[in-house]
Length: 127
Image (cartoon, rainbow, N blue to C red; front, side, top):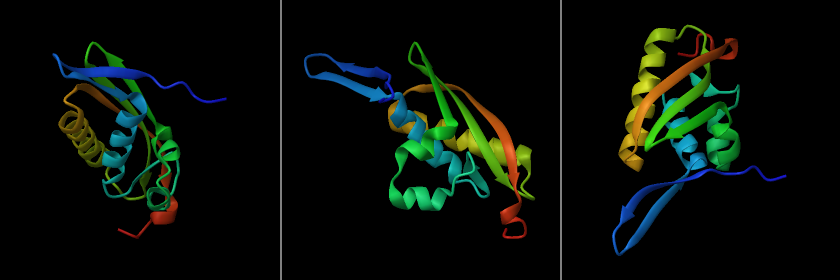
């Protein structure tokens, strides 16, 4: 069964047309921005491998998007490499996700909530 996408109008250009974006696209932007931070992955996935395969569905799996009146709230379920500062990494991810979504979509990001689900011991000492 196909998953239902939510689509939102982000711009109405009078006489020319409208611009719509799906929550899946916003989730992908958030996932790519989050995993650009050192030692961060989503849902225990191998991020490099998923990027190479362009598997958007899997990469954005640990991201939840909530839209209300032109604003976006993002919830990210992250796995961090052992030895990473949770506070510093969380702040970096929040800033990158907020900036990426706002710059690419023109939407206002109200929240970027980080949920650290695990610490990846496989990357210990690989920093």
